[in-house]
Image (tube, rainbow, N blue to C red; front, side):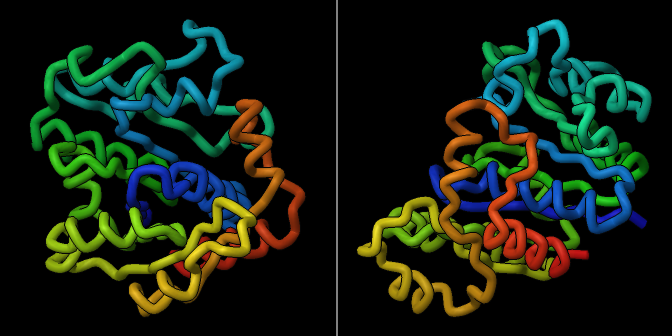
Length: 241
């Protein structure tokens, strides 16, 4: 049976990039069997910056699937965006220009249908959960997940987010992995303080200039050659396999 992984974190902690890179490593480590990366974010639709060089006609919004009466595997498959380099790694999300008013709010039943189809289509489903408490897709993904990855960056904002939203995670029956994502090479980052606050952080994604370049140039779907970053991303992927 497929595994469902929910990636959570404060706004600006690098959660989307971390989730995407872990999804890539899961795909490669598992013999290129199907993996889905899903971002339900409608404040900053992910397909707009993951595929900034694609024509809008070549991208497919998951909103079109969720507004139908029922959700079928064929519909999810048709609305999955892929790349030539890693054809079995599919991307699902919303397109640039869409927002929370673009589609009707999906019902719980519709979301369950979507998640069931995702499990049937892929060995692993990685959900890049939003930090919005009102987002039903993210809330249900956390409850559905076999594993939750909590992404922390070494700053006070991350600590405040998890303190204020602790109730979203405390009652979940899932196994949880806490990771530190270093977004900057500033030597004065309060890494030790954040380590002490979370206590369970055992895995770290190091700062990578290459990752920052990918984010700026819109090439996040490509693999990085940075050995330190790749080793850390593989370690996280192995922890959820």
